[in-house]
Image (tube, rainbow, N blue to C red; front, side, top):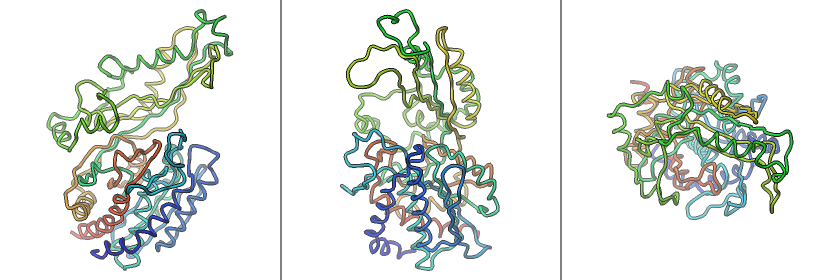
Length: 457
């Protein structure tokens, strides 16, 4: 594997050029206007895997967006690594806040700037290029399968059915995922826990039509005002979520575990400076690392209603809307939390309005083992390329399919990502460091090598 660095140096311009071609395709899974672009992106992934040396490469249709499957079986007696990633991206809005067009990638100051650069196209492409290196140099030490989907950003709603229908060809020993981050470029880390998710949309309806706010104001419930009041009551003065039963199944970490979590390098001053805020905000009694890693949350993701165009329009709106997400921790169940939220929200509604709760998608929290062969292999690989042993961390985000894989395939996952929290994923000016992209390509072959060797023991 020692020739990986010279291979990267020789081919890095091509790697970056091909990645930019990948990033130019606007694979926004949430917006039906981009359906053909999502399909083109699946074809790009297919062609890239074929060029890298994969066999049985196939675009697998689903009722939504397709899944790209590929494999390279070199010896049935060897262990098999199943690589998962996603090629779909978040919407790029608001477009006016981008410094350059989101689907016209630029490389500036060592950063690849484009929607999907880090989440997850750049990290998927690391695996393609690492596989290419192993194939061209006859260094693939175990079997590999690829499952790259196009609906992660909308909840992977068709992935479960596809997995259940393809259990035989998805048989393997471990799942390798790069859709997470490290603490810093000089502080490698591996996520060993992810929060779950419940995502809902709410609608509050007052009168049967928009009204003149002078003629009717003060006499009829205003849905925007009511919605804001209801949302404000979702947390108490300690930022504790007020949904009855919300915390019933939360697994509280011991003082020792909390102390261990807080040993991860973290500067509150740098955190505030990066976000341009003068203080942090969250559940009382917990540190920032605990609030984002081991505690559940309730957040507003969008709120709208009435007139929002230029100038004034004195309207009392008929409807108001909001999108809300709840991040969950072990043992919380997304379906239960969604039901508890809906029941609570409907109870809160005052006379004069009607409310509707529409669940979107969700997923379960997970904790991955640190004593497994796969984790040890990932740790050894990162120590080899970074020169430091990675720190186990808990991620605040959600990858709902990790729990799905364990349930349906009986496989644990290792979360070996190379992004940074500062990469602005889901935000304008998303980017991925050239260093991180190339470091991923360098590290992944070492994971395969270490996993194959440790599996023999």
